[in-house]
Length: 271
Ligand SMILES: C[S@@+](CC[C@H](N)C(=O)[O-])C[C@H]1O[C@@H](n2cnc3c(N)ncnc32)[C@H](O)[C@@H]1O
Image 1 (spheres, protein in one colour):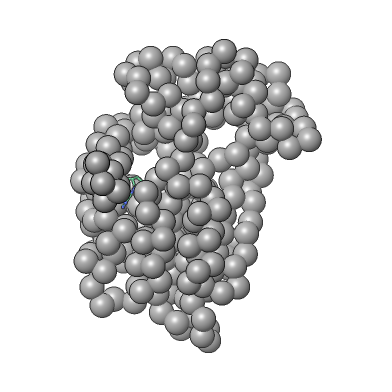
Image 2 (cartoon, rainbow, N blue to C red):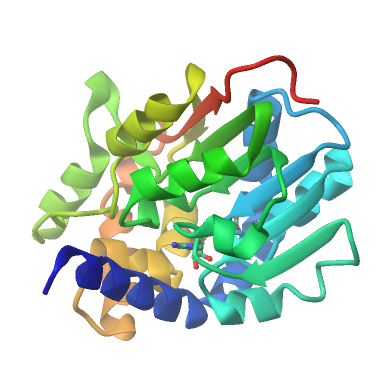
């Protein structure tokens, strides 16, 4: 299979996984309010300006879009590969302020045409893209001069002395550490950002190691596939629960680290 065919296959699987994730995704968000909190944290971290325009890539069913509109008065266009995510978000979008469309974040010009945005944001989505260089090149084209691209990333679980608690949990469970937890890693995404943008900044949002949260987060079907690929969902969710239960003695010492990065399209201010 050629590289392009492989990338397209990955994207088809991603769309299917998220199509199947809606109910649990919504239940997770109702319980934890997490994706909203992460989107707002990213927006505050990059100092988002009020009443600006945002292109939200990998928007899911519009949690970030709604939060950015409610808190900062931003107008948001969301794009997502999963038709069911977008359909589930239609009740969240209202008229001109929030629009959600089905589309591929690696082919943004096709979806947004000539429109230019003050910000292009990826909230917990960029690590699922097989071609981060392509999506960043595309989002750069959709950005006004002086605008920013920013992303939040897949979590790290960090123990004392920077120990990788994912590795500890898999060892304790007696299961092999998955070779790829993400499709594109943080350095690849950062390199792509650096290739186009200036003023690159990296940030971290550090949270306590909450094993119940991790169980709920990774039980979302699409997330569980990153830890236990090639298994049926029932087996995956049982394994996810057992995996994070092995860390219950680490809750005082461990941390969940959400990394973020931002870069600017060279020029003057956002507007
Ligand atoms: C973990 S969810 C995050 C959703 C949303 N940003 C939020 O905060 O709720 C990741 C989303 O990225 C979307 N996605 C993955 N690859 C994509 C691509 N190539 N183009 C557009 N969306 C993509 C998935 O369909 C999924 O809805």
